[in-house]
Length: 214
View 1 (cartoon, rainbow, N blue to C red):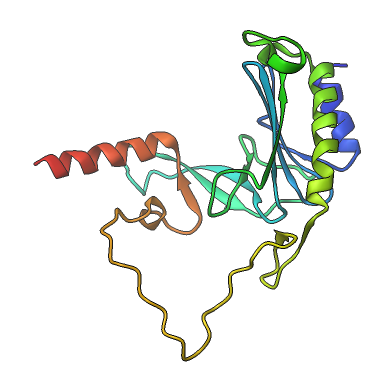
View 2: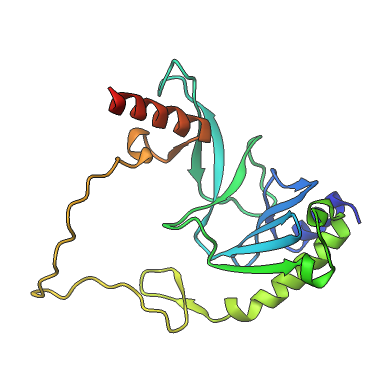
C-alpha cells in the first residue's frame, strides 16, 4: 500500500487530513470523524500518536502580510475553523492543535527498540503499509481512554473524574497572585488570530535582547 492509497482510505473513512502530511518520514495530522485530532510521528525508534480532544484542531492558513513588519515581510498564519471533510483548502494550509498547553491530551507510543529491537532510525524509514498498521494498533489502544472523556460544563471534554475549574463563590476572598514581570505574549503584537512563524518569533526575541543589553 502506498502513502497516497492510505490517505485515500482514511478520507473514505471520514478523516479530515492535513495537506502537509509526509511519507518519508511518515508524519500524519488528521481529525477523526468523532472530532479527535491525531498526530502520528515516526522518528528514531519510536512511533508516537498524540490525540487532541475535539475543539483543539484548527486550520492554519498562510498569509503574507507586509504591513505588520514591512522590513521583514513576515509570514503569518491565521487560525480558521475546520471545514467539512473533503472540502477544498488553500495551498499551504495545515492542521494545528491549539489549547493552553502544546502537549496532546493523550499519547500512545510504539517502542520499536523493545518491540522490534530497533537501534537507529528505523521508525523514520517505515513504509506506508507498516506505518498504517502501527497507527491502527495505537488508535485501538487509545480508544478505551478516549471513551472515558465526558462533556464538561464549559462545552468541552474532560477525563471522567477530573476536576473542572469553576468560578470562585461570591463573597469568598481569593488571594491575589504575586505580580510577576513578564514579556507580553507574542500574540498581543499581532491582530486577530494571526500567529507569527518561528522566524518571526526569533527576530522579535533578538531585538528584545538587544534593547535589554543597552
